[in-house]
Length: 530
Ligand code: D5M
Ligand code: FE
Ligand code: ZN
Image 1 (tube, rainbow, N blue to C red):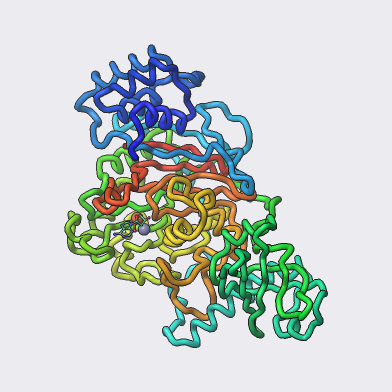
Image 2: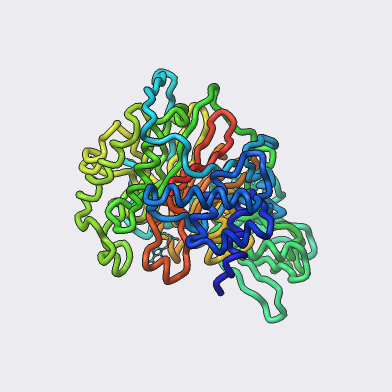
């Protein structure tokens, strides 16, 4: 059901950290273009103000009339904002949307359209000798998969080995075949890959766990607190279950469920100097909905003094719209030839200051294999995109920027998480919560099948072996920022306006938002260019 205009206005304002008095809300809701009015009001409100008054709004509305005809690309969509309420098992409490005041650690600041633009010429002076970019976990050139059955066995075995190692120290586990020999009533624990989740006739949960020796069932009683954790469980992820054996020894009654997870006290790395990275994704050049003017506002901003510390640009997939990705996609193509799309993308990269260090990984719209891990672009595409000599890597990759480990992953599994998990654990409105789940499972694509196409390799490149400092994804075209056990999670929005498909399923994309990460503090400021 569509929200009434005033409710929408209030939501939008709160998402930017503002309250407003009743008259102010009425004025905004009655404006000819309430979205633009809200955007303008937020933009022009003094920094120290938390409650917008009718006076502020009138000034902002006057401003819009003055500026009419200038920047009227797309008025701001209902841009979602970082979390303000935190789920109990997460750490995103410190992600406050503050307008200026720096309080707790890692705050996120929302900043609307940049103050400085093209007109302000400014000579960037950067010391390229201070730059450091290292890439690990990249499949490019190392793919060995032949698609044979044995490869699937190998990749799952590797996943089990590496994730079970993270759990074995925490429980006194027994292999499944040893459990079968134990007598009933004893305490027992098992570390296994989730093979099956079923509810019993009486509403309890039967979870079948598999290790390299066989399978063993665990029963989770519906009235126990841990039953909630079954909602978070996905097939193929690796968990540990502790409990006691039934009297016949055939099943474990679960008392505890453990996920590989990230330690709560994970210590993050930071850069030694004040330097920033712009984290974006989903550019979709070649689509009729590509927000080219907004992209240019972003790249113009990169040339201004305000952006002088932005020395890195990370793009987490979907450089171009691609061809044949979704049914009927061709009806919305602006450029139909895939190579011409990359040529056009390359032109867009040229707008970025030449001294910015660029890292690109592919997404599901890019011209590399769809199955994950995806290798980086091939020679022909690299040649087309060799503007500013970008670092080109696979999806996923860990990119260490001046000591800060950034796990870049396009994010197709977020669709799967949203489909499978309860709304408070993963949703399109709060995509960072889905990222928390991926960190908890220590795997970027825990569930095989569904949306996910996983390529069988000797090794599971999708396991999150080392805890990153920053986790950067995209794909769902929604902005989401939070912190999970000290790991900064950033899902960037997109540069593609709402497509017909998104309209049909009521997805409101966050267009032209660029989260800017301080590498020395891991603080994020969201810049909007719509
Ligand atoms: O997808 C952007 C988001 O929209 C992501 O959540 C998938 C969803 N999407 C977009 N188009 C489709 C179609 N045609 N079917 C199913 N889901 C879709 P991206 O792949 O980044 O464009
Ligand atoms: Fe995309
Ligand atoms: Zn995508």
